[in-house]
Length: 174
Image 1 (cartoon, rainbow, N blue to C red):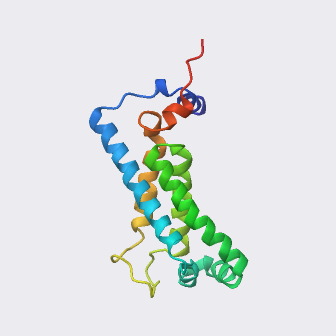
Image 2 (spheres, rainbow, N blue to C red; image 1 turned 180 degrees about the vertical axis):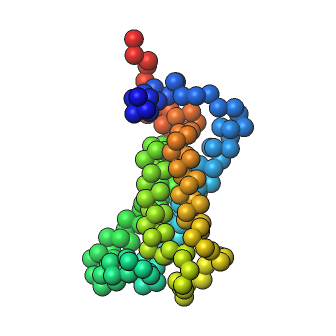
């Protein structure tokens, strides 16, 4: 029943619940701010010809340190990861800002942030040479932004304010 309801909501946005102006505004502002963060991070990486994710991977601690070392050791793998990281950030950011394919953008953002989180987890005993904004214990900005993107996934504001309204606008079945 839940799957059918979610499918119907995705296909027929007119059946979406009505939000108050304050609720809708808060959700759209959250979506745009997170989109801006992703877009900005991607653009900074694209315009810097010396940027690479190698430094991030060399800092990896825990069970994924071997995979990170293997990625850095392979120029081809590192190039692919760098390309996907840069352009993935930009695509996710643009999707969230424009409200275009917002569920896909939100889920992609969750996946990307999850990789950031598991490759450099904020756990006790792990020290990093790259400075962080604060002192974390399990919860860091990546985890918080993942949760915010999850909220945007289940409250698809793009079908109300965004290009998703044009993409997924369909007439009700007769």
